[in-house]
Length: 285
Length: 296
Image (cartoon, rainbow over all chains, first blue to last red; front, side):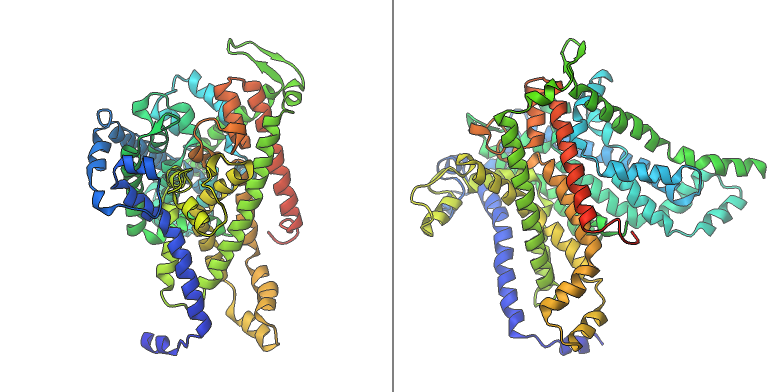
């Protein structure tokens, strides 16, 4: 059956022209990564004197930079990595738990004020988070959470967008299951935790990736909260190596390559939920 | 029995408790505080004095005008680029091309990097040296005679650089959005239109566009929201102050005013202006595209 279908496709010459165009585009999109990876093996003196360009002396390439990156200032790079990972983990676990709770409540029950909650959530989705950072900074400072990882995670634990998404996915769940469990004397939270959460696995996967990636790449808020060098996240730590007095390319380039690795791994294992996690907004509102 | 009924009635409110907490503590309180501070002289000592509209009057400076202009140019260029290239790529890769999946993945790969990493790469590719890629190409094509410092050359080139970084990273996502929307366009409709003698452009204009309208509206709304509040692209390319405010955006100016100059009053005023711009542009856009008109 499948073979037959494949045989049917008759490609026009236009398809081949378009393919060649797309291959050129793909090369353009990949080339910065190529230059990054190649650059990470080049001595930093080469990068300082030549920048990244077509002229590459492959014979001078070595793994030295990767060693330097780990040794730099007593392994501060690994601390940044740990910091990024722990913030990502905390934010994703808390975000999934609280947002799915609220989304479940909004999608599963009919109660007074439900539509008000939903409208409030939609309004928050349209509000730029950036304008709230000054009072949030004061708030975090008053709670003595400045320069802590929890301070970074605190305001991001309940995400309006994730609530909305979970609500959408809960609406499609069979409510009879909940009723049956209720007759058997199951409490409301246990219905959610033991029956509904396993049914929402796909939504959890997509939102988990959405949340993890947002946390991994977040800059503005951690930049404000974190102060001591050891606690910086990767993006901020890496950009702190770019100074007007010179850039530490021997740490920067391998550091940047290694910072992409976790996301790459997640992508290759969970491609499907990854793509749906990033393009989640196309659900009908 | 009675007890169970009760727990079912209370449960939804308990489930929504985290939202209520977040709504008041993380959104509503800071929002009101921002509005309040924008009318205040916020002193580090803690005593705040209401000064009416003076913060807003003080905003009329060259810095603010530059930030406003840069943000506008960035948003327009970035949105246009995303729509044109995202749509072209999606339309092409929606055909049965050879190697279609590999090509889709390749365009998507930059999404996996982060903006800061994109900034590190593009700083080097667009360096001021004669041997950096951008200068090599531009000089090879004869566009420029002397190598130029792309990042500090002019406001316009600075804005384009931010668009380059943003587009490299997010065209893949936009493309996937459009692709999944295109796959939902009913084939029979297109077939019927073709039988009635419509050409490809007419099919695209009258069948495809209306079918994928919700996605178009969503991507546009998000790209306006993200575009006007851009910070990371600017920070990735210039993490210290730039000559002549190259690459200064509204959020960046807010950050500078708040955390470098410690003037929370002025910074809040910038935030309020930013919010008014975003909300009004999005409302006008949604109204024009008729989101409120139809069933949704």
